[in-house]
Length: 371
Ligand code: SAH
Ligand code: SF4
Image 1 (cartoon, rainbow, N blue to C red):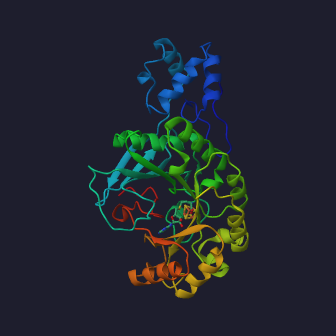
Image 2: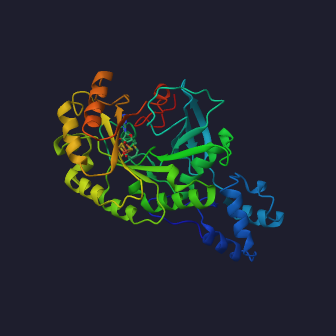
């Protein structure tokens, strides 16, 4: 068993169990002369049971645990360094990785991916479902002009274990029993998941096969890394797909999302059209409304043309403001007018309620803001 060696991921002296699949755990067991079933015991302990320390894995012989510890083996669940609670129940977690890098993960009780739009608020005590928003990279290289994460640029990719570990740490902190409570995962935190594709996909498989999330309760959002869209469509097991459209023509999109110069709307929409949707599945387009930039009726009409013929819905998000962001938030009437124009043209459109804006936990606000 050697420590993981991935491009763009630091080599650690510790070996972290989180992130290893059942085959890799078998190799670990064999390399220690342990029987095959030890792999399954470790798998059960670190994924469905979400144990955070070797000492807690009581199914393993004490001596084997001691050997592992001596070799620097750890479970590797990120440590919750700080948490901030919003008036709406949303919690923003600052998570520390083994090398000291930090990312943010957000818990939204009653989070519904923003589709109900009924404005109801539920207290922390009697929620029935929740959403966890997970980060995939430390920072982000894509540099969208309206996003606070972009200001960090990218420090490194997260490993599959660090992605899964965010979910486990939040579930433990909230005392969640996945058999009784319904939790969704959105890969919409810091980073561009499709620029960390292998680790992101490995995390998805571990969340499904290990932690116990059905793939139908996960959604990944991409800014439009076109070659990865085809790969993703071919995955036997995958979350639902959301594409950050954010503009209705190339002029505006290139201005606010520089990635559009590499893969423009023509290429992006072609990939979206070719994306193999499953039975009853719809693609989601996200559209951040920026005052006077992309929020006019003419833009809404262009969106209608762009998505024509694609089984989809559009999630509208009024800009969540932040320091260093030059754009303004459109007023409510403008947002409603945009939504209604889409809806009347037969494009299902939903206005996403901002969650945790007061604590910088809303979309595009994740930046390791400590206060
Ligand atoms: N990197 C991926 C996923 C994380 S961003 C992506 O860009 O798709 C998740 C969503 O937040 C994206 O749809 C993005 O367009 C949106 N977003 C970014 N900054 C925002 C802001 N300041 N206000 C509202 N939404 C924002
Ligand atoms: Fe990265 Fe997404 Fe922010 Fe763009 S919106 S900078 S892709 S995290």
